Length: 235
Image (cartoon, rainbow, N blue to C red; front, side, top):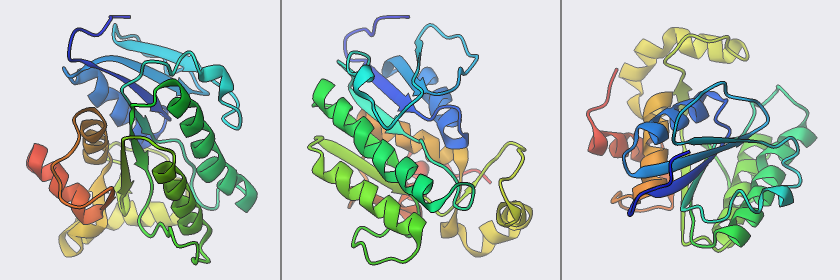
């Protein structure tokens, strides 16, 4: 693996085998400001790149073994998650909240100056009042990250994430949304975002910060504005 040159950043990505995480990895490897990328996940990515180091980790309920791996990192992009309905409520909370908190704990101890980009979701409720599990748990994870002590935290709340590349959709709702996406995008542009565009701004924020007003929470409208600042929005 290449050693970053002066000024280049060391970036760690969690969840690079997922839809958004996969694009995050691509953009990180292509970004000249990134000197090294460490992918932490359960699955081997099957990718070879001089910037890339893969670390397999089976149990995100305990990330203590990652302390050395996470030492000296400049930023992290956390895309680990699951779809509502695909697991039990208890597992949804564990994956969404507990895994995020545990990873952040070890990263903060090993790289206290790291920036943190987090894939949250539209409707995330940091007040703890929501009765929707996804919203409640994403809000809890956001609160934990903001309290963790990182110098910069970027919380991304996309609405419908368009997959871009064909895939097996996780449920009927996603199959329906993919089918009506062209019309939905025209009628409600601030309720959709391409997976690759979302990944691009998550990497850019973690590595270089953002000039976007507001924050640390970025709703779908904000994400689109950030994409537009990097390059014209694609259809």
